[in-house]
Image: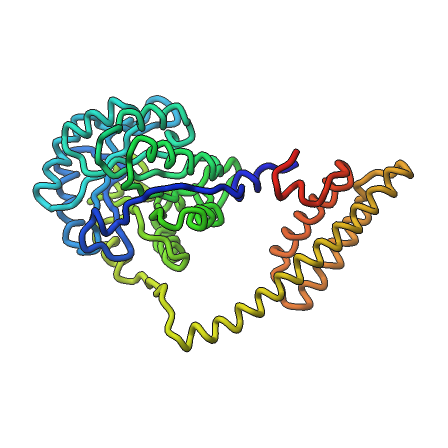
Length: 380
């Protein structure tokens, strides 16, 4: 059975106590913007970038990597603790909150000594519960905000687990960061967005602010604006955008960083949809939503009837010693349904994915002989 969907959409109850953003970032307005270079390189580069970013009113947080987890040795691994006084100077000169990625209790200790305002846990750290546990333990009785990136692999429970471990340590100022998920295959993005995962996190924990990192999702500056707009359309709370005074000369990830001026233009062009409805609009949407509910009920009822027939087919095949998978029949179903979908003006790629999921579940029912509810409840 495929556990991918269960990992993402497992019905869990989250007991989180999250402090609202407005309680610790005065005057905050959506979207929250966090910007700064991938890596701190020199004191001049950090200060020049910060001063240019500080001229953009919407930016509230200055981010900069000091310890860089590299895939292979030999690449620039960050300036380290040497850059912490530079960030102290950034806050003194600009008033921006400062934010640094930490991957060990030692990093945490160094940041606290230098009055860093916000810590963040990177994707490579979140993927390891041992590391998250150690960092959380080092934060007990420390009142500091922490931002949590999603793990590199698409596992919602790992992401949730990192937030919960911080909560157990007494951290209540938490922001989740969606930075996409690693993929082995070549894709249009550096990290695949899989928007359904942060959307599910939003559903399970509506009180948890979630911002999007379009720099790491896209991997190229030309994609940042488009991804930022998608994030706003999906009602996420803000953006973390890698910004460098001279991106072409950056020591790390130069292709996905933009200039402060490009950041200013991006923010000005962002359309931030309202999340409130007036009475007339709410009434019109209510009628259409009732129709949607009816269609969804019909879809579920039809699927239930289909799977009951599938179960009967499976019994017959077992009695007659017939293979559960019939390639000719599958091709016939796929071709006919896609042809019908095209006739009705539906996206055939979308319909193909649905048919493949239905077929996979049908094979599971036939081969395992289990109840239809097994794949939903997580039974094995």
